[in-house]
Amino acid sequence: MKNDSVWHRLPLPDGEAPVLLTRRPRQSIGIKVSGGVVELIAAPGVSQQRLHQVLRQRYDWIVGHVLRQRSQLAAGEDLSRLCVLGEPLALRLMGGARKTARREGGELLVSGVAAGDAAGLKAILATFLKREAAALFPGRLSSLAANCRRKPSGLQLSSARTRWGSCSADGRIRLNWRLMQAPLAVVDYVIAHELAHLEHMNHSPAFWAETERLCPGWRDARRWLRQHGGGLFVLD
Image 1 (cartoon, rainbow, N blue to C red):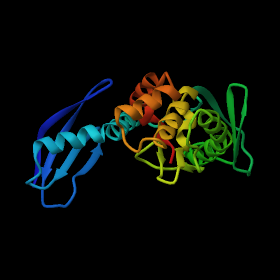
Image 2: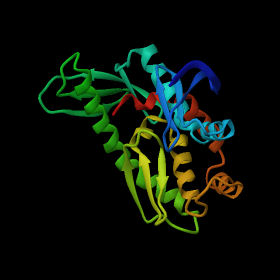
Image 3: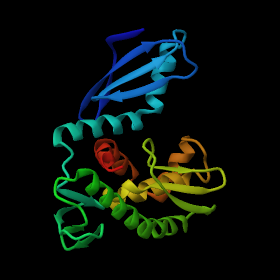
């Protein structure tokens, strides 16, 4: 049975988001974000304390989805430009049959997509960002990892919708290609975050101390992701 009254108001960088609570039998606690509204779905016996704990644990994921949905509604998915490492590039459609994109000065020249074909344009932009990420991320990872006792065992690009990066127990690091749209300092923070997990597979004070050692400006970068990260998911 759904309870449409607001159970909680989650603070955001630019205001707050209403949280609805739906009680029904289920094994785990579910989270849905739709139209900027958060819905928690939990069994009747789950305590209030546990529900608030889940909100804290999934805060970054929730904020990212709320801000992405808000930005899409406000901008109508503005596809007139693309940010690369925080620098906005104006898009210019060049015609032609070959689907490609290349940077020229302050513009991104896009070929092989017709005007008005939003899906086709987004696909080309995503391919471009993946290519740029594949060229940039290994070097940034190697540079930061030089200061680590334990080295990563490998790097892969990720298309995850719920996280910016991950580090497996065997040391393999995955980084979301959409980070290519963020400033370089943000990319380095996510890399440092995952490298810190090589030593601490948790978010203990020791983990954050290691993140600080690798990336002294991590707090500003984390704040940027919370405020703007949702908008990076316009591209699939």
